[in-house]
Image 1: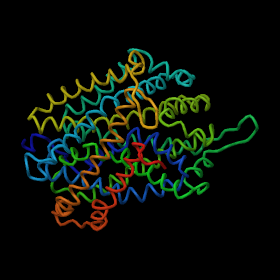
Image 2: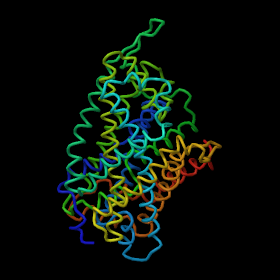
Image 3: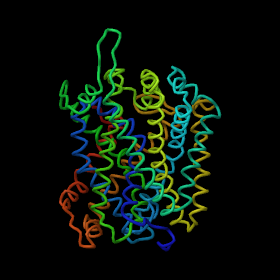
Length: 470
């Protein structure tokens, strides 16, 4: 298909904001602070930063460059990359399209939850959300979660329907600055919080900040250190949106004249900065009211723990909750937009569909599966998914496990093998420097994509499958 008909980003700013918006999602909001609190605070931050600048950089660079070089979506990019219409590497394209296809329905379900809470706080009913059974009663309701999921999906579909420049780029230029301002404001407010418990002990947000940023080596063994490295590595998949087809799709819309290295560096910085601020937003507040044990809440942190904290703040709590969930909603929308676009662009390139037709078809499919996901907490509650370690989960948990812990590592490993050993790293470095740009981390990129990245990802996958025990 003619690249002119596919659309493109008008400038590098739109691309950077869109890619950063994809990276800054729900995983950054709840998962990053949780892992940081669990894994020694500043020690996790340091390890994450090192991995982001090396491991994350290699995967980020590979996928964005594959997109720009081929001007294709994830489904068709790999056949164009090896210059063979029929190649065994086509399966990599199929998997890269399958991941966002499976993620979109359950991400919209969670996005619907966020929208519900944003509405509750915006209408001044935040105290209700602090109730012990509020969240459980909401998701176990038959149709209300479905309605919010549909609204969330519709918002994303409208943006993608409008196209790359008028939809994705324009919305990103509006949403991302607002998102950044909200994140900074909440982070600053979190540092000012203080609370006196029944014993008269006062805890401040600054004390919580120390827990977050100062490395703690208490109880750190070789095994524990390796576990922290694996946690940080796993977080990179959530944070950078790698191995999801998204960056290939967005990269395919980047003009040839764009300085890719500069843009990639900006995306790295933006994502890491917001991930860090997510911790500053959440860790001090949770520490003040719930101590370090409060950080073990995981995903329920947003929907159960934080509403209780907002309620403990008194009259200002509802306002803080409204701003917080508005921020989370913006983050969820920008990520969901990119997930939807990865599939839509694949339909456009593979089947020659118009953008409007591709958007309608994929949205309809996401709607059907999304309804099933929502019903998995009520009328389909009897459907249980068996996970490694003997645990069972919902339909949502099953889709999340398949995509994040099986398919995404497989895609990342296969991409490293293709780039590092089959085509050689020069295919990427040549595209990056074709306008005379300097690739300062060229040597690091080659080492990471050929040796270190695939080995680390394989370890992560084996751990996720329960084959290796830490």
